[in-house]
Length: 142
Ligand code: CMP
Image (cartoon, rainbow, N blue to C red; front, side):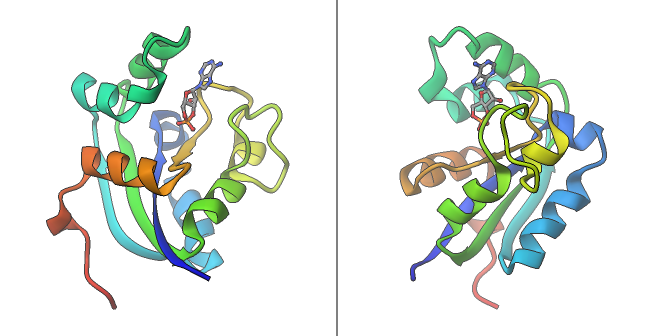
């Protein structure tokens, strides 16, 4: 089983609703190791880079506005099959359709304001984490 890293971001709705500890706690209890953690308020430029694959989609402007509407808490997590396991733990995009027991299934009733983001592939992880972290902010093995 591959040791992987993934990026998880608690979005502005999750921060506003006081769910940061809950999200971190779920990933820690699952067995993931935190490699980096920060609170930051994304600029429009960062949001555009972060969501560049969605540029041109009908919800793009709304998405950029939402993700820059308040601070986010971003983390890099490491563990076995981190990318696919984190995606299972957050649930499908639309909080109304996400399974109970998943983060979105338990806390969101919206497709836009869905509490949390997690990278969907290794390629996305490398692109996304560089928008929010410098390599100096990622700790070495412990
Ligand atoms: P995320 O997993 O961060 O990836 C892209 C984000 O765009 C998604 O979560 C939602 O916040 C948002 N999103 C995706 N599809 C829609 C949609 N149809 N309408 C509004 N927002 C969307």
